[in-house]
Length: 433
Image 1: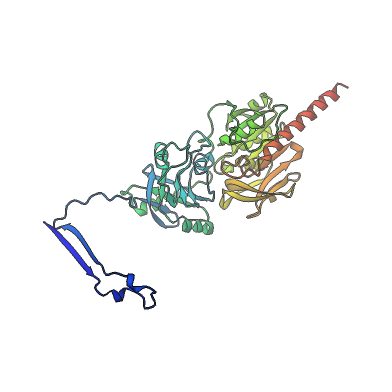
Image 2 (image 1 turned 45 degrees about the horizontal axis):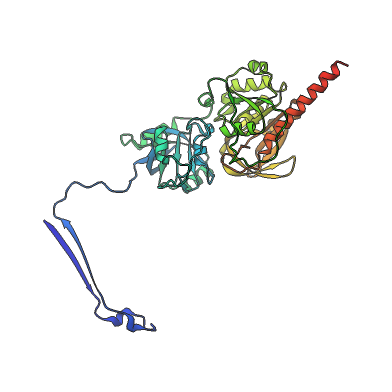
């Protein structure tokens, strides 16, 4: 039996409806408002609410528990929580192999409206955002972010205070966390998981590297090409070690005229040298550089024999191979707005960065030059060793996502290979005199 509740509101004194200073009180009119609602005396089964409620938890190793709403895959996953300050390019971030083993928290609040990829799959452990876009209006978008992550078994959460968590990470450093949508797991169980897992000393490169050598030919698409300077001339043969390489690094090299062969992280240095490359690229990649001594040994066997260019993880491996040390940063550098000073030119670049480790510049041997410095914390952002034709930078010159200030690094690598090749020809010619 339905009960109707009616409310009558009659305003019968118009004089109470206007301010004493009102210029034209005669225009005010009395009105009657009738509100009614029907309810049932019986309580049927509750209907499904038309909005999503909190169904996920992020439990951090410091004991804090954050309720959130899930999207993408379901289940339980452990990872290191880092924050990224990029305003755009979240899909490039999702597919950046350097994020393997990590939950990426986006400081930009609104996420979910583009479509670009940097590798063959998603490698990060999970995505944390403040607000998940309910529309996908980008003209290249093929599916929602939730569907995209679900197909790739990647967990995501939203409707969580990312600003508070970011401040905590900046204050306490990167934290291990557990994402879970499983109600059967208690907060205590999830906390124990976060405190019993560690990312330090783990070889993450082997899980993201290619399994066999292959040639790369794709260049930067003409509609996205931002450097229109002519790059004609001699093509250089480059061997690119895949420690978790991003597609746009390869595209930029190809756009500069390089013929590229990508090889696995475990590819022997002897095989590389048999291929007689003009230069070797040591790529970006995830995790702790000291956890991959086999890669350090490979770098040692190659440097000094051919020009070498290191990016991110490759930069750190070069530092170790030269006799330096690396260290884990408090919360790392993750984002597309990091200022770097080029000490050779004096120019400041706004760079895209993604790393939790850095080279200790004070540990480097004599002859190795620090060429770039991060202006946020003074950490080493670039190296050069002219005696062995080595150059490296800690950040991403291809900047996908990010600004294009550092694209010149690819040109400098070309110039380095050209100089060495010309010198070798001169020396060969002199040997016949």
